[in-house]
Length: 208
Image (cartoon, rainbow, N blue to C red; front, side):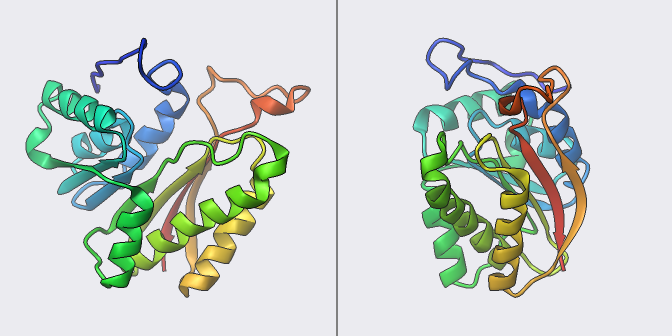
């Protein structure tokens, strides 16, 4: 039910990520009445679904001015501009500032970052990057708030991603109640004889 204008010439990869289609719908089901922060919004797909799903307000954040402009265009096309705000800034800095200022502006945070690793040699650095943003998001959320978090890197295996989340929760002093664990949509099939096809990890949690 959401319409998108897609820049398939100058956009990232194909300009739109179809593999998150059903994950966006799952995330939107938790958005009603909530203040949502959509980090790494790209063209605003998670943000738009949450706004349409009844969120009180959605803030879409991306470091790319082009991405934010595209998100604004999509919000306007769907009649959702009044329920959304748009912020062009670095997500790491934003979350760090919110932690340092002890701000709990949002009760639902979505983390859909680009792949932090594209080879086995950089998995350790990627682990730190994923932990960094998830730890900060957990510290920014009030008890009972919701976190959607994912990784699109094949090299960040499920067990390692879950260990990272557990480490982040421990450092944040919170517990996680898992609502859903999902992968990519079925038109991106996982072939058991082709490990690279098992790449997307998507989790919905309540912070308790």
